[in-house]
Length: 260
Image 1 (cartoon, rainbow, N blue to C red):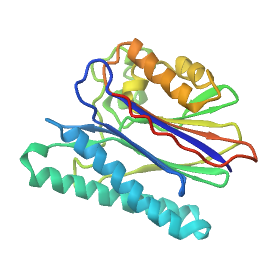
Image 2: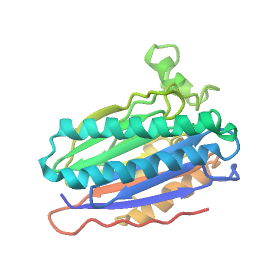
Image 3: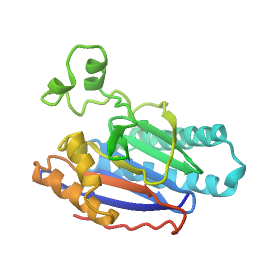
Image 4: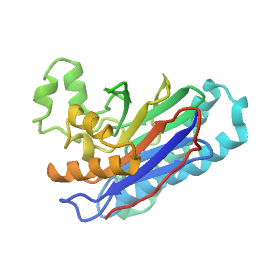
């Protein structure tokens, strides 16, 4: 299952610093995205700790486990690594006053032969484009999503809600955290997008779907997504991780442009 990866992160037009963090490990086919929160530069610290820890620890485990690990084994490893990252961030926040209250959202994906295990915490998202149709494959852990689920507001009303960005689950805020994980089938031609809410709050699904199909080059697609979010206001940091499932030929590749 040849894969092609691309990562990009941008400060946006309204923020002075970037609290998002992204990571890819080609060897283990691991992708990670985090959107930090907290005073001072604590959000940067939390998101950076999460992506670095998970890429290092989970990436090493995946390489060592190779194809002998079952999907259940991988899911368990994801839970353990996220729990360890959560405790590290929580302990840092409680031992350093300037980091008090810091935390981060998280999306982590592990590609296997014909399958994707995707876990998430918070309101950063995972999408799949297949046959021209975009599907959100994560479910926001947010007050807004709870209101939609309970029927208090519609999805259309949610676009104008004052409760955006209020997450109900985050890494590092409490001493434990629950990673929601689902298994998805993967097909040649699929394009997967992990993104922070700096993208999903600025662009609707139709716009995202069109931009994901705007070029065969993932670098151009990523630039188009970031530029469109900035053109729509750029109210937050914007980060994307893209993965395309190629045909029978071609090795996995990754590029890392970090735009400021």
